[in-house]
Image 1: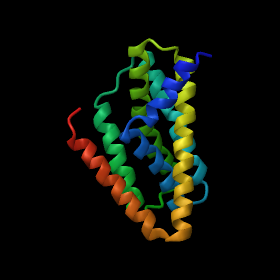
Image 2: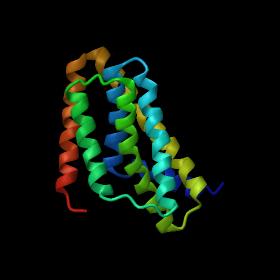
Image 3: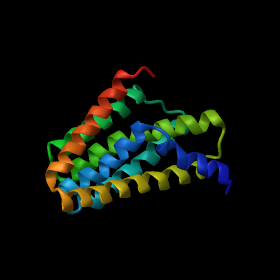
Image 4: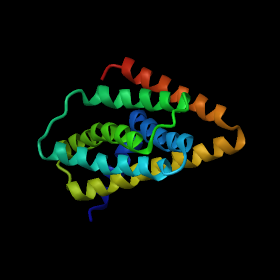
Length: 170
């Protein structure tokens, strides 16, 4: 395995506020919903981020990738701030649809740089799971210390961050 390509993949989700906020939000929203959402929504996101990556690397283009990524931050932030406890299946669908666009962005970077796709993908998959775990950990810490209000405020701040991303020219 080429370490530099793995590290490039690992760094991609950690290098932009859009990816960081969305992936943390998946974990936070899982805490809001509880139960099977704690593992199902992050698992759906990780699975579909790989599908989006593969789609891009196979030449299947998705429209409005940057807008969809920014929208994912806003929507996930709102779901947290409004304490939406969606059914597990619908939360998985929401996470999965947004993950397609995040994965597509990862694929665009890998293809443009001519990187070994498997090694790069291993890096971003681990970083994505790490960010979900951080979101879950933060959500549990917030819920334990200040309860749902802190979770909801954090969701609102994430949504505002997403709106700022939308207002920033690409």
